[in-house]
Image 1 (cartoon, rainbow, N blue to C red):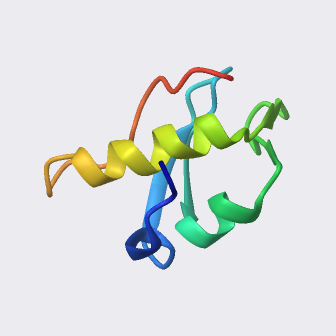
Image 2: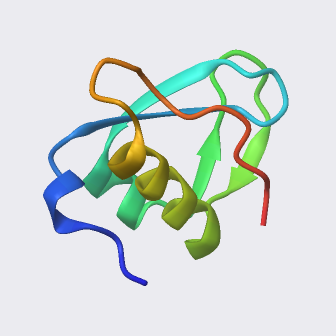
Length: 75
């Protein structure tokens, strides 16, 4: 499975696995980032390919009016 190019310019939301703070970034940022540092709690989260796939997949299958994904597991 690959990261959907149609979401590279879209605002994608995911949540810090430690404090659940919502984070909005462009799909292209998520694609290229290796580590995310939460502004709220300073937790460092490694953005593995599996986690990136989960974020993209959640947005591809989310109902149109619902934001974000919650509870992506660290991989």
